[in-house]
Image: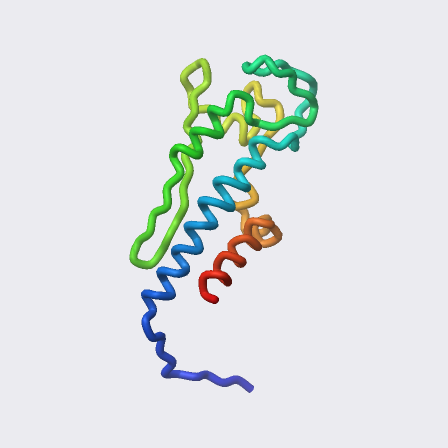
Length: 150
């Protein structure tokens, strides 16, 4: 057995859209930019074989953060944008920091390419639906939406 109700109407739909957009903006700026990505870069959570000395002079062990001088992290924060169209909204970051060879190195760190012996995939929890579905950032988005809609 099934049923369909036809004829429902949203009154003042732009109000709902505005509330959802505001919730998304707060989530992207506060929960992702100031929370999730800060943790991804600054927490000692990434496994790496052996010990090295960073450009900052700090020794880095087998479990480390990926902050170092903060250039990669800062490049993402500085390029953060929210774009809203008629039917969509998105948040974007462009980790475009360059290494001493004047090459953007985010991909090297993220995927473990070149001298980066281990991948440190700081965006995967947002990019892959299976990881996002079980993440704290998804719960934060749900909380933001629930608060916005009352």
